[in-house]
Amino acid sequence: MLMGRWGGTCNHLHFREIARLLPPRSLLVLNDTKVIPARLHGSKPSGGNIELLLTRFVEDGRDADGRTEVWEALGKNLGRGPGGALQFAGDLRAQILERRDEGRILLRFSGLGDADLVSRLGEIGEIPLPPYIEAARRRATRPGDGEGEREGQGEGVGAVDDRVRYQTVYARAPGAVAAPTAGLHFTPELLAEVAAAGHEIVGLTLHVGPGTFRPVKSEQASEHVMEEERYLIPDATARAVQAASAARRPVVAVGTTVVRALEGAARAGRGEVGAGPGATALFLRPGDTFQVVTDLITNFHLPRSTLLMLVAAFAGRERVLAAYAEAVERGYRFYSYGDAMLITGQSAP
Image (cartoon, rainbow, N blue to C red; front, side, top):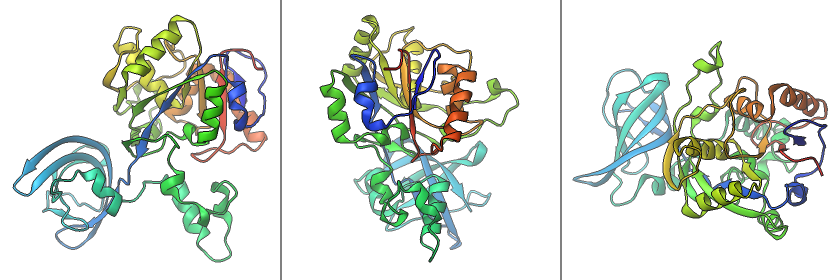
């Protein structure tokens, strides 16, 4: 769906046309974070099964057996007491250091030797797919039940390798627990077409955490607190964004995570996007202004989500809701493997 940020009718096209749909001489900003196999299964000292979802690296250290790492995580079946060491495949183990609100815990992992935990996860962890994709996969394995194929891009769910499919083709920096799904539409060939059409492409890293997808439960949206997410903006990207903004060229964010990184950095830099690491808990909602991003590529988001509120802030609540109603009527797909929209600050071509 091609939608004008400031009004006009929606156009219904195909994403493969994106190179010509972008405003002339656009700066396309990608999030190159890579989803890690952050779901771990293990056991308690009592022998009971547990499940962890690693959400954020905190710090590393060393003990007599080698490297240690502290991570924040969400846990299932952990009980309430401090307990002993949690055991995972091989020699990997973890000690609960602290229990936080909303089911979060702080753990110290050991038994790593000289390796880091992310490298071990490739052997023992699972990609943390959204629950609706996992449910579709389970349905697809039942004899005579093909309902789950709807989430698999028409190729049959059994044929989809989510370790590959649930990553952007430009994923580079491991650390996310969810994919920046607006980027899933791009192929290497399509990115080459975008560059050949005269557009500039740069990247940044924001490791997507579970807080991005936590629904707003407060009666007043202003009472909702976003979880902080870390980002890294390379020097080349900061310079490109500054140059594009100075020349009044379009800055196109591929996904809401790029919006939050750029707009968070601009607020931290008094209007200028600086290079380097940072963190943002920015919650953009209707009435907020955008200092950097002029155009947005995004998927279709669920009601009461901070993602939909960001899109409504960007293009106007009534316009976005009307566009969503049209998308539903025309059978657009929502969710991670769903369809996309380009919200452009220029007139539709």
